[in-house]
Length: 290
Image 1 (cartoon, one colour):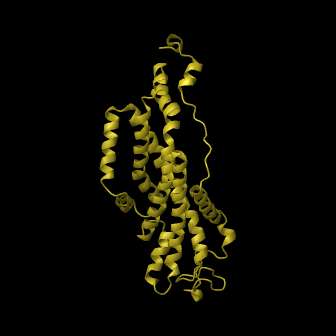
Image 2 (image 1 turned 90 degrees about the vertical axis):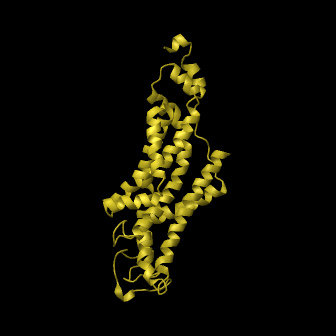
Image 3 (image 1 turned 30 degrees about the vertical axis):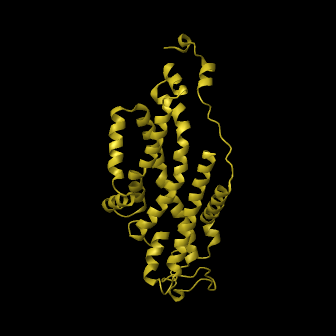
C-alpha cells in the first residue's frame, strides 16, 4: 500500500517516527571516576615503551626477587629478574585488547540476533531461545574452559571461545527491548507504508533498543578480562613469556611468602581496570535512568 493511498507522506511519517538524538551525557561522579581511572590505564598501555625502562621478557637472574622501590625497579622483580612494572605496563595492552575484542563480535551478533528474533518471533524466536536456555544452564567460565580445552591454548582460541558463548546476554537484552518496541506507533506506521522487515529493524528499532546493550558492554569487558586472566592462570591463555596479568599471578603463587609483589601487584592492576569499567557502566546506567 502506498504512502499516498494512506494519506501518509514523509512529513507525517517523520512525526510518528522517533528522532534519535544524541543525549548529552551528564558527567556524574561515578562516570567521571571511571573515565579517569580508565584514562590512566589506557595512557599506560599506549605509552608503555616510554614509561618502562626494561624489556618485559628480558631475564636478569642476578636481580631476582628484588622488592618494590629497589634501585631501578620501582615495583621489584620476579624470579627471573624481570622488571614487574615493565611487565604490568605491557600486560595492560594485551588485557585491554582481550576485553575489547572479546565483546566486539558478541555485541554485534547477539544484538542483531536479539532484534531479529524479538521482531519476527515465531519458530526462529523459539529455536534461538531454546539454544540460549541450554547455554545458560552452564556457567560462562565452564563453557569457555571446555571450548579452550578442545581448541587448545592461545589468544585466538580465547577470542573464539568467549565469542561462542558471550553473545547470549546481548541477545536477551535486545530481544526484551524489541518485544517492548515492536508494537509502538512508529514501528506500526513504518510497517503500514510497506517498509521491509530489515529496514524496520535496522532503521527504526535498532537505534532505540541498543542503549542497554551498549551499557552492558562495559560489564562484558570486565568479564572478558577476568576470563582471560583466569585462562592464563590455568595455562590456557597467552603463553609464556608473553606478559599477562593472570599468567603473572600464576607464576608468583609459588613464591607468595617470599615475593608477595609478584602476585599482589598484577592482581591490583586487574582490580583497577575492573573497577574503572564497572564505574563507567554504572555511570551510563544512571544517565539513562535519569
